[in-house]
Image (cartoon, rainbow, N blue to C red; front, side):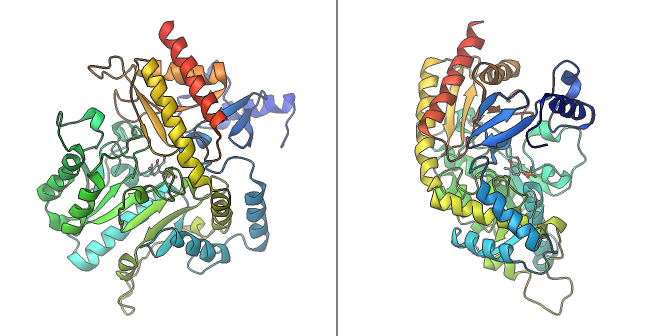
Length: 461
Ligand SMILES: Cc1ncc(COP(=O)(O)O)c(C=O)c1O
């Protein structure tokens, strides 16, 4: 049913209303309104079941469709691969998996090995298992704790949630996996230490304080988002990353960078960490790897980390005893190879930086015009605007008003924007913008104009 008629659409809506349990959604409202069905996408635009055209300023809702919708060359690459070989468990190789691993590593100096699975949560779970197994093999199991940061998110499975710094995502899902310890966030706009001269070092030092409190001999890993996504679009302050790197090296803590959102160009570099000269031990990625054309995630390690599992061929327990069935789906790396080609051939990283700068300029203009915008921040085409009831006290804007602004963008201007959603109590007040990396200046202007009109409407009513 690629181009459904009116009767068919009505039956689709009814089937959806009756049987689909939507992600992150309270369903009661569907007793009075229809669930939204997206039927088609092209470029940065999508069409719903009524035929209404929208600009998608959030790349499929969750920072995923980096190269835009309707890419026939990716569909062709996936189709060709599926008819040749759709699947074989990744304990053996397949052609696109080998070729994508080589291409990926060429974009990640210092990294060497690619482990395939199929969601961001799972890629992070692999990273945790790597840290845990090294702890057991080298440190008698003691150096097993993994630190994560307040406001960061690393996925939805119970152990990924155990490393989540967003209270509202965790509440009611405990008890959690032991051995995960929180460190403070690094959002200077909401500084925990008042006004400090060097907030970047202060926030990084807070990580060392936790390591010393827990005992450095118990801490094996630290996971961080390069730019925090769903926790409020937070780019770490100047000086932060240098100190983090020093602290990890000093205490022999493996640095895991979660590139699930920033990976493959979103911040204007291949990976977010590459903006800051960081040298990670493990990097995880998912969403933008194949722009949502197939499910794929990767846990990438240095040769040194890999070698920890490779040293004793006579020990039946020392290698990485992990498998992900669908990590053997050949569609993922086939799509990822073509996705990478598009990013390169269309110079989309450069476009991301140029258009990202324009988006930030437009957000700064909106901030000058609307008092409810307290802070704008971001990197590349990954931007946020934190809304406040009062600029001086920084009291967060009521979540219902933020939702009304998002709703107005959609209803008045047919522009889909996002907001921090069930993340931190009282702090779901940041508008999130992440259009596809192909977007143009006029697309950005349409998005900014829509936000302008929505804020004007909501604040003058
Ligand atoms: C930074 C980050 N890490 C991990 C994940 C989990 O990815 P997935 O939903 O594919 O499991 C997400 C999802 O939004 C994310 O934003």
